[in-house]
Length: 138
Image (cartoon, rainbow, N blue to C red):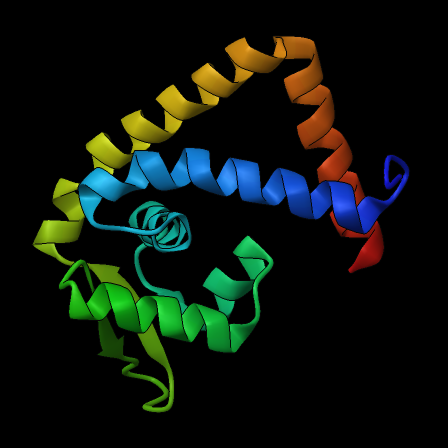
């Protein structure tokens, strides 16, 4: 019935993928969204929340909420900018840094697992196509 509906198929796929990634990040006490924000901060310490939001394609209030969650878990911290006191930069804490390798290894493993389930060609094609659709609609 909805085989050709972008909304239905993308939402159904998102729920399935959310479950897969949720299982991967659960041992770290994180949701997939929190895990991806932490990975951004680990890769680019000193990012602004607006930069995190832009990189992940999420709303700024959503990024702020996720960063707040990570601050509560003591995995990241905010530091006020020296040049402009209105800007707050996000840095990983020692506990956050300790998750760098484990969370990236877990992410790589789920990507390998999904690629094995789908086949490398379908996996790469799907990711590339979804990226193109996101870019065209934004």
